[in-house]
Image 1 (tube, rainbow, N blue to C red):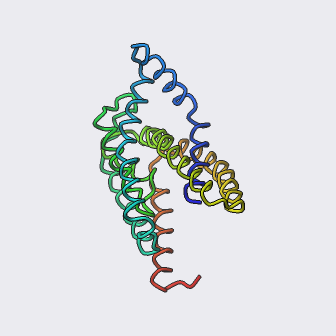
Image 2 (cartoon, one colour; image 1 turned 180 degrees about the vertical axis):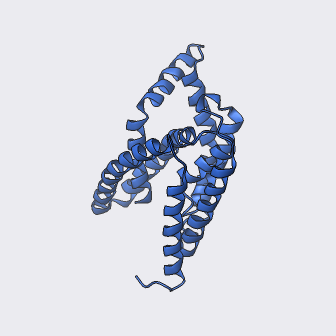
Image 3 (tube, rainbow, N blue to C red; image 1 turned 60 degrees about the vertical axis):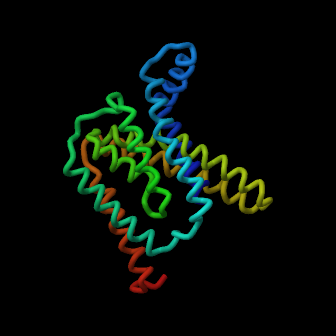
Amino acid sequence: MDVAVHVGTMFAVCVYFWRDLWAMIVGLTRLVRGKRDPGARLALQIIVATIPTLGAAWAFDKYVGDGLRQMVVIGWTTVGYAILLFIVDKACMTIKRVEHASYGDALLIGIAQILALVPGTSRSGITMTMARLLGYERIEAARFSMLLSVPTIMAGGAWLILKLEAAHNKSLTQDAILGMAFSFIAGLFAIAFMMAWLKRASFTPFVIYRLILGSIVLATAYGYIQI
């Protein structure tokens, strides 16, 4: 179900950022003919950023699995990375756009994405944190993070299809499809709101949300709240 809802939000990303995705597709076709353009460059950077995550995800699934899927872990990562995002967002420069991205920046953001394999980290949160650390404008950090989600989640979607086929569980498949549909709708509204917000403000509301959520999870994990 985790993967299913991510696939739903991936479709939301594709709808919202269709111009960037189309530019990358066109750019790659031109690249095959020996012509380079900004779309091809962005596509190659997204590929560079994705490669570390795919290798790490395979190792994580093989050797760790659901071992870290515990409320305590989720609570502390939710709180900890919220604080990190707040510090980085306030302290770092805001000078770069996606068009200024280097392959080194793309690789560093891709390496940061590996941390999202730990439950509670937030893939978009940690990649936007790294982008802000590298000096990208808030909206540009979000833009690169969202585009980076597409190939990563596509790989996860392929893995999901294989798992569902192997399970031969009609009910599970229906639940996964329903989860995708709801996450697509929620994701599209969330992305539109976030991008509009970041044009004029900071990540602080998202930090506050994560602090509240993480605190509730930790209070529940340590027995202070009974659910």
